[in-house]
Length: 345
Image (cartoon, helix red, strand yellow):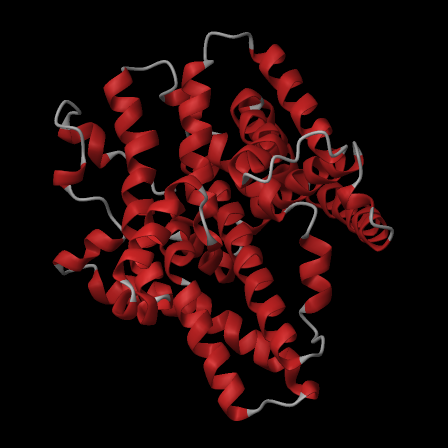
Protein backbone atom coordinates (compact mmCIF):
# COMPACT_ATOMS: atom_id res chain seq x y z
CA UNK A 1 0.00 0.00 0.00
CA UNK A 2 1.51 3.32 -1.04
CA UNK A 3 1.88 6.32 1.21
CA UNK A 4 -0.47 8.40 -0.95
CA UNK A 5 -3.13 5.76 -0.54
CA UNK A 6 -2.84 6.09 3.23
CA UNK A 7 -2.48 9.86 3.15
CA UNK A 8 -5.87 10.56 1.64
CA UNK A 9 -7.49 8.40 4.33
CA UNK A 10 -5.87 10.60 6.99
CA UNK A 11 -7.13 13.70 5.19
CA UNK A 12 -10.65 12.22 5.08
CA UNK A 13 -10.50 11.42 8.80
CA UNK A 14 -9.34 14.98 9.42
CA UNK A 15 -12.32 16.37 7.52
CA UNK A 16 -14.69 14.10 9.41
CA UNK A 17 -13.39 14.88 12.88
CA UNK A 18 -13.55 18.62 12.20
CA UNK A 19 -17.14 18.31 10.94
CA UNK A 20 -18.14 16.25 13.99
CA UNK A 21 -16.59 18.68 16.46
CA UNK A 22 -18.07 21.59 14.50
CA UNK A 23 -21.53 20.09 14.87
CA UNK A 24 -21.21 19.82 18.64
CA UNK A 25 -19.59 23.24 19.03
CA UNK A 26 -22.00 25.12 16.77
CA UNK A 27 -25.15 23.49 18.13
CA UNK A 28 -24.11 24.14 21.73
CA UNK A 29 -22.98 27.73 21.14
CA UNK A 30 -25.96 28.69 18.99
CA UNK A 31 -28.32 27.04 21.45
CA UNK A 32 -26.79 28.97 24.32
CA UNK A 33 -26.72 32.31 22.52
CA UNK A 34 -30.08 31.80 20.82
CA UNK A 35 -29.01 32.71 17.29
CA UNK A 36 -27.52 31.05 14.23
CA UNK A 37 -24.05 32.00 12.97
CA UNK A 38 -22.26 31.49 9.68
CA UNK A 39 -21.16 27.95 10.58
CA UNK A 40 -24.74 26.76 11.03
CA UNK A 41 -25.34 26.13 7.32
CA UNK A 42 -22.18 24.00 7.14
CA UNK A 43 -23.44 21.87 10.02
CA UNK A 44 -26.77 21.35 8.28
CA UNK A 45 -25.08 20.62 4.94
CA UNK A 46 -22.83 17.94 6.44
CA UNK A 47 -25.56 16.16 8.39
CA UNK A 48 -26.18 13.40 5.80
CA UNK A 49 -22.56 12.26 5.56
CA UNK A 50 -20.31 13.27 8.47
CA UNK A 51 -20.95 10.13 10.56
CA UNK A 52 -21.49 7.70 7.64
CA UNK A 53 -18.10 8.66 6.23
CA UNK A 54 -16.42 8.31 9.63
CA UNK A 55 -17.77 4.77 9.99
CA UNK A 56 -16.93 3.86 6.39
CA UNK A 57 -13.31 4.94 6.87
CA UNK A 58 -13.14 2.94 10.11
CA UNK A 59 -13.91 -0.22 8.15
CA UNK A 60 -11.53 0.36 5.23
CA UNK A 61 -8.56 -1.58 6.61
CA UNK A 62 -10.51 -4.28 8.42
CA UNK A 63 -9.56 -6.96 5.86
CA UNK A 64 -5.97 -6.82 7.17
CA UNK A 65 -6.91 -8.45 10.46
CA UNK A 66 -10.47 -9.79 10.29
CA UNK A 67 -9.45 -13.36 9.53
CA UNK A 68 -6.17 -13.24 11.44
CA UNK A 69 -5.41 -14.69 14.89
CA UNK A 70 -8.20 -14.08 17.37
CA UNK A 71 -5.86 -12.75 20.09
CA UNK A 72 -4.37 -10.15 17.75
CA UNK A 73 -7.79 -9.10 16.49
CA UNK A 74 -9.26 -8.88 19.99
CA UNK A 75 -6.32 -6.79 21.17
CA UNK A 76 -6.29 -4.32 18.26
CA UNK A 77 -9.97 -4.08 17.44
CA UNK A 78 -11.78 -4.71 20.72
CA UNK A 79 -9.63 -4.11 23.80
CA UNK A 80 -8.12 -1.07 22.09
CA UNK A 81 -11.51 0.65 22.24
CA UNK A 82 -12.43 -0.85 25.59
CA UNK A 83 -9.33 0.77 27.07
CA UNK A 84 -10.12 4.22 25.73
CA UNK A 85 -13.81 3.97 26.55
CA UNK A 86 -13.25 2.95 30.18
CA UNK A 87 -10.53 5.57 30.67
CA UNK A 88 -12.32 8.51 29.10
CA UNK A 89 -15.77 7.55 30.34
CA UNK A 90 -14.27 7.79 33.82
CA UNK A 91 -12.47 11.07 33.10
CA UNK A 92 -15.40 12.79 31.43
CA UNK A 93 -17.91 11.63 34.02
CA UNK A 94 -15.64 12.85 36.81
CA UNK A 95 -15.16 16.24 35.17
CA UNK A 96 -18.82 16.82 34.39
CA UNK A 97 -20.34 15.11 37.44
CA UNK A 98 -17.85 16.09 40.13
CA UNK A 99 -20.55 17.52 42.44
CA UNK A 100 -22.40 14.21 42.25
CA UNK A 101 -19.20 12.28 42.98
CA UNK A 102 -18.57 14.42 46.06
CA UNK A 103 -22.12 14.39 47.39
CA UNK A 104 -23.37 10.92 46.39
CA UNK A 105 -20.58 8.50 45.41
CA UNK A 106 -23.02 5.60 45.14
CA UNK A 107 -25.12 7.49 42.59
CA UNK A 108 -21.97 8.39 40.71
CA UNK A 109 -20.95 4.72 40.64
CA UNK A 110 -24.38 3.72 39.34
CA UNK A 111 -24.12 6.34 36.60
CA UNK A 112 -20.61 5.13 35.74
CA UNK A 113 -21.74 1.51 35.47
CA UNK A 114 -24.81 2.47 33.46
CA UNK A 115 -22.50 4.14 30.92
CA UNK A 116 -21.20 0.74 29.79
CA UNK A 117 -24.67 -0.36 28.72
CA UNK A 118 -25.92 3.03 27.55
CA UNK A 119 -22.99 5.20 26.40
CA UNK A 120 -23.52 8.86 27.12
CA UNK A 121 -22.31 11.96 25.36
CA UNK A 122 -19.80 11.80 22.54
CA UNK A 123 -18.19 8.52 23.63
CA UNK A 124 -20.98 6.56 21.96
CA UNK A 125 -18.86 6.47 18.78
CA UNK A 126 -16.00 4.66 20.55
CA UNK A 127 -18.49 2.28 22.18
CA UNK A 128 -20.13 1.62 18.81
CA UNK A 129 -16.84 0.85 17.10
CA UNK A 130 -15.98 -1.90 19.57
CA UNK A 131 -19.45 -3.39 18.98
CA UNK A 132 -18.98 -3.18 15.20
CA UNK A 133 -15.57 -4.88 15.33
CA UNK A 134 -16.84 -7.61 17.64
CA UNK A 135 -19.93 -8.37 15.54
CA UNK A 136 -18.01 -8.35 12.27
CA UNK A 137 -15.53 -10.87 13.62
CA UNK A 138 -18.38 -13.15 14.71
CA UNK A 139 -20.07 -13.10 11.29
CA UNK A 140 -16.89 -13.06 9.18
CA UNK A 141 -17.72 -16.39 7.49
CA UNK A 142 -21.12 -15.18 6.29
CA UNK A 143 -20.96 -14.15 2.59
CA UNK A 144 -20.18 -10.45 2.30
CA UNK A 145 -23.13 -9.59 0.07
CA UNK A 146 -25.57 -11.28 2.45
CA UNK A 147 -24.25 -9.24 5.38
CA UNK A 148 -24.29 -6.06 3.32
CA UNK A 149 -27.89 -6.71 2.26
CA UNK A 150 -28.81 -7.41 5.86
CA UNK A 151 -27.17 -4.17 6.98
CA UNK A 152 -29.15 -2.25 4.36
CA UNK A 153 -32.28 -3.96 5.64
CA UNK A 154 -31.51 -2.96 9.21
CA UNK A 155 -30.95 0.65 8.19
CA UNK A 156 -34.23 0.66 6.26
CA UNK A 157 -36.10 -0.84 9.20
CA UNK A 158 -34.66 1.85 11.43
CA UNK A 159 -35.72 4.58 9.02
CA UNK A 160 -39.23 3.13 8.89
CA UNK A 161 -39.41 3.22 12.69
CA UNK A 162 -39.61 -0.56 12.97
CA UNK A 163 -36.47 -0.55 15.10
CA UNK A 164 -36.91 1.83 18.00
CA UNK A 165 -35.92 -0.04 21.12
CA UNK A 166 -34.96 2.99 23.19
CA UNK A 167 -31.56 1.38 23.72
CA UNK A 168 -29.14 3.48 21.71
CA UNK A 169 -26.71 0.61 21.10
CA UNK A 170 -29.28 -1.40 19.15
CA UNK A 171 -30.78 1.61 17.41
CA UNK A 172 -27.44 3.10 16.35
CA UNK A 173 -26.15 -0.28 15.28
CA UNK A 174 -29.15 -0.70 13.00
CA UNK A 175 -28.73 2.77 11.54
CA UNK A 176 -24.93 2.87 11.14
CA UNK A 177 -23.55 -0.63 10.66
CA UNK A 178 -24.16 -0.54 6.92
CA UNK A 179 -21.56 2.21 6.50
CA UNK A 180 -18.93 0.44 8.59
CA UNK A 181 -19.41 -2.88 6.83
CA UNK A 182 -19.47 -1.17 3.44
CA UNK A 183 -16.06 0.29 4.23
CA UNK A 184 -14.77 -3.24 4.74
CA UNK A 185 -16.67 -4.94 1.92
CA UNK A 186 -16.11 -2.25 -0.69
CA UNK A 187 -12.60 -1.17 0.31
CA UNK A 188 -10.97 -2.04 -3.05
CA UNK A 189 -13.63 -0.04 -4.89
CA UNK A 190 -13.25 2.90 -2.50
CA UNK A 191 -9.47 3.00 -2.97
CA UNK A 192 -9.86 2.71 -6.75
CA UNK A 193 -12.45 5.50 -6.77
CA UNK A 194 -10.19 7.81 -4.74
CA UNK A 195 -7.27 7.07 -7.06
CA UNK A 196 -9.30 7.95 -10.16
CA UNK A 197 -10.61 11.11 -8.50
CA UNK A 198 -7.09 12.26 -7.65
CA UNK A 199 -5.93 11.75 -11.22
CA UNK A 200 -8.72 13.76 -12.86
CA UNK A 201 -9.05 17.17 -11.23
CA UNK A 202 -11.60 18.77 -13.65
CA UNK A 203 -13.91 15.75 -13.54
CA UNK A 204 -13.60 15.48 -9.76
CA UNK A 205 -14.40 19.16 -9.22
CA UNK A 206 -17.39 18.97 -11.57
CA UNK A 207 -18.68 15.92 -9.71
CA UNK A 208 -18.27 17.66 -6.36
CA UNK A 209 -20.23 20.69 -7.56
CA UNK A 210 -23.11 18.50 -8.74
CA UNK A 211 -23.05 16.58 -5.46
CA UNK A 212 -23.04 19.79 -3.39
CA UNK A 213 -26.18 21.04 -5.14
CA UNK A 214 -27.95 17.69 -4.73
CA UNK A 215 -26.94 17.39 -1.08
CA UNK A 216 -28.08 20.93 -0.24
CA UNK A 217 -31.43 20.48 -1.97
CA UNK A 218 -31.95 17.17 -0.18
CA UNK A 219 -31.15 18.69 3.22
CA UNK A 220 -33.48 21.62 2.55
CA UNK A 221 -36.29 19.15 1.81
CA UNK A 222 -35.53 16.86 4.74
CA UNK A 223 -34.62 13.92 2.51
CA UNK A 224 -31.49 13.17 4.53
CA UNK A 225 -33.63 11.34 7.08
CA UNK A 226 -35.93 9.57 4.62
CA UNK A 227 -36.13 5.88 3.75
CA UNK A 228 -33.54 5.07 1.11
CA UNK A 229 -32.56 8.68 0.58
CA UNK A 230 -30.57 8.82 3.83
CA UNK A 231 -28.51 5.83 2.69
CA UNK A 232 -27.98 7.28 -0.78
CA UNK A 233 -27.01 10.69 0.54
CA UNK A 234 -24.68 9.11 3.09
CA UNK A 235 -22.97 7.11 0.34
CA UNK A 236 -22.71 10.11 -1.99
CA UNK A 237 -21.36 12.27 0.82
CA UNK A 238 -18.79 9.65 1.77
CA UNK A 239 -17.68 9.48 -1.87
CA UNK A 240 -17.42 13.28 -1.93
CA UNK A 241 -15.29 13.41 1.22
CA UNK A 242 -12.99 10.70 -0.19
CA UNK A 243 -12.70 12.72 -3.41
CA UNK A 244 -11.91 15.96 -1.57
CA UNK A 245 -9.34 14.15 0.58
CA UNK A 246 -7.68 12.60 -2.47
CA UNK A 247 -7.45 16.02 -4.11
CA UNK A 248 -6.09 17.76 -1.02
CA UNK A 249 -3.11 15.42 -0.73
CA UNK A 250 -1.31 17.52 -3.37
CA UNK A 251 -1.55 20.77 -1.36
CA UNK A 252 1.02 21.58 1.31
CA UNK A 253 -1.34 23.90 3.22
CA UNK A 254 -3.86 21.09 3.70
CA UNK A 255 -1.50 18.94 5.79
CA UNK A 256 -3.19 20.20 8.94
CA UNK A 257 -6.09 17.95 7.93
CA UNK A 258 -3.79 14.96 7.77
CA UNK A 259 -2.44 15.81 11.23
CA UNK A 260 -5.98 16.06 12.59
CA UNK A 261 -6.86 12.76 10.92
CA UNK A 262 -3.88 10.95 12.39
CA UNK A 263 -4.83 12.27 15.81
CA UNK A 264 -8.59 12.01 15.44
CA UNK A 265 -8.89 9.81 18.53
CA UNK A 266 -7.10 12.49 20.57
CA UNK A 267 -9.47 15.21 19.38
CA UNK A 268 -12.55 13.07 19.81
CA UNK A 269 -11.74 11.99 23.35
CA UNK A 270 -10.77 15.41 24.69
CA UNK A 271 -12.86 18.02 22.83
CA UNK A 272 -15.93 17.94 25.16
CA UNK A 273 -13.78 19.45 27.93
CA UNK A 274 -12.50 22.58 26.08
CA UNK A 275 -15.97 22.88 24.57
CA UNK A 276 -17.48 23.06 28.06
CA UNK A 277 -14.88 25.64 29.10
CA UNK A 278 -15.65 27.80 26.06
CA UNK A 279 -19.38 27.62 26.77
CA UNK A 280 -18.74 28.87 30.31
CA UNK A 281 -16.62 31.74 29.00
CA UNK A 282 -19.27 32.68 26.43
CA UNK A 283 -21.90 32.72 29.15
CA UNK A 284 -19.72 34.86 31.42
CA UNK A 285 -19.01 37.28 28.57
CA UNK A 286 -22.72 37.45 27.70
CA UNK A 287 -21.89 37.21 23.98
CA UNK A 288 -24.63 38.89 21.88
CA UNK A 289 -26.62 37.14 19.17
CA UNK A 290 -24.83 38.91 16.32
CA UNK A 291 -21.54 37.31 17.39
CA UNK A 292 -22.84 33.74 17.28
CA UNK A 293 -20.70 33.00 14.21
CA UNK A 294 -17.36 34.23 15.58
CA UNK A 295 -18.11 32.62 18.97
CA UNK A 296 -18.81 29.29 17.26
CA UNK A 297 -15.63 29.52 15.19
CA UNK A 298 -13.52 30.35 18.25
CA UNK A 299 -15.10 27.47 20.17
CA UNK A 300 -14.42 25.11 17.27
CA UNK A 301 -10.79 26.20 17.12
CA UNK A 302 -10.34 25.69 20.87
CA UNK A 303 -12.03 22.28 20.71
CA UNK A 304 -9.67 21.12 17.93
CA UNK A 305 -6.40 22.81 18.87
CA UNK A 306 -6.77 22.29 22.62
CA UNK A 307 -6.68 18.47 22.46
CA UNK A 308 -3.80 18.53 19.95
CA UNK A 309 -1.81 20.86 22.20
CA UNK A 310 -2.46 18.69 25.26
CA UNK A 311 -1.36 15.61 23.33
CA UNK A 312 1.83 17.33 22.18
CA UNK A 313 2.66 18.42 25.74
CA UNK A 314 1.96 15.01 27.30
CA UNK A 315 3.57 12.89 24.57
CA UNK A 316 7.02 12.74 26.24
CA UNK A 317 5.48 11.91 29.61
CA UNK A 318 3.80 8.81 31.11
CA UNK A 319 0.48 10.66 30.73
CA UNK A 320 0.62 9.90 27.01
CA UNK A 321 -1.25 6.77 28.14
CA UNK A 322 -4.34 8.99 27.95
CA UNK A 323 -4.05 8.75 24.15
CA UNK A 324 -1.79 5.80 23.40
CA UNK A 325 -2.49 2.41 24.90
CA UNK A 326 0.42 1.31 27.11
CA UNK A 327 2.00 -2.14 27.05
CA UNK A 328 0.27 -3.25 30.26
CA UNK A 329 -3.13 -2.72 28.60
CA UNK A 330 -2.35 -5.12 25.74
CA UNK A 331 -2.86 -8.86 25.53
CA UNK A 332 0.41 -10.61 26.39
CA UNK A 333 -0.04 -13.09 23.54
CA UNK A 334 0.23 -10.30 20.95
CA UNK A 335 3.76 -9.80 19.64
CA UNK A 336 5.33 -6.40 20.41
CA UNK A 337 5.94 -5.65 16.72
CA UNK A 338 2.25 -6.25 16.04
CA UNK A 339 1.27 -3.88 18.84
CA UNK A 340 3.52 -1.17 17.41
CA UNK A 341 1.70 -1.41 14.08
CA UNK A 342 -1.63 -0.66 15.74
CA UNK A 343 -3.21 2.37 14.02
CA UNK A 344 -5.04 5.02 15.95
CA UNK A 345 -8.82 5.03 15.62
